[in-house]
Image (cartoon, rainbow, N blue to C red; front, top):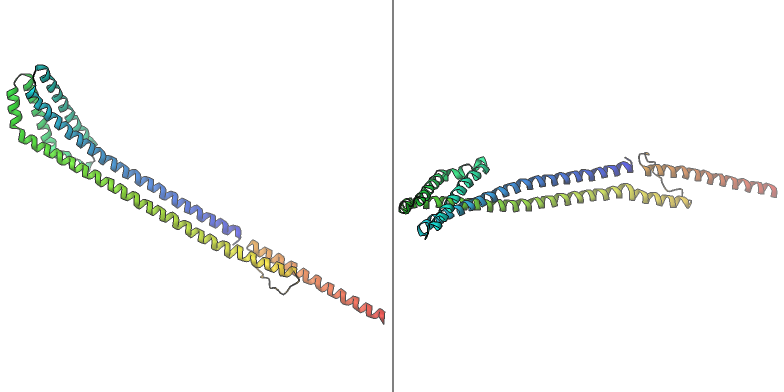
Amino acid sequence: MSIRARILVLVGCFSIMALVVTGLGLQTIADDHRTLQAYDHAYDNALRAERLNHIVSNVVMETRGLYIARSDEELQGFVSGLRRNLDALDLALKQWQSSLNPSESDRLAAIQQDARTFIALRRQVADFAVAGRLEDAHALSTQNRADRIAFQNKVDAIVSKTESDLDTARAETEKRNRNRATVFLVACTGSILVLLVAALWLVTQFVTRPLRQLAAAIVRTSKGDYAVPLPAGDGKTEIDEVWQALSVLKSQAIEAEQLRQAEHERELKLREIMLD
């Protein structure tokens, strides 16, 4: 194999390494995207749960405000706030239910009926207040206090579960990032080291060492040391071609040396004949 072919093979190996690193990078991006989607979903669930809990607390506070209103204007303000928060609660439940994954659909199922009962009862309390039946409103609210507390406890449980899911998603994201960074670093470093070792071996074995041998042979041959052996080579590499060219020069130099020696001997014989 020629030096050019070996260099092309080495370049091809570097190209393969680049493709592997690129593929690993694309896989990392895809994994990060999925991880971030899971984290965003967990964060969205936690945010929705906190908002749900906040609205329920507002409903309770607005209901209590009905009984301490000092004027019809204040009463109407609490009624408006109560109805607005009940509408917001109903909307928040519907929006959250539509955003859940199929595997999470049971998360809100446990409070759907309680939520509908809670909303219906609080709307009735608001209607009583508007009609001036505050005692009936208070009695209805008091009678269902245990149900309201149970409902709020379920909401609190959902809030705790979503926060736990968010912590899990955050920990999983951090773990995946650390693992992927380690794999990426090891793969890149290992590939580079392997290719560097292969490149050094290739250059040393097929370029540096043969060139040194060739340079030494040229120097000895130029000094008339024709006893230095020259490898025949198979002509498959550029250095083999130089060896063959040097062998031809060596043969021609030996032949020229022999001719000079023969000419010198002939001149000596002629001098002897002339002297005789």
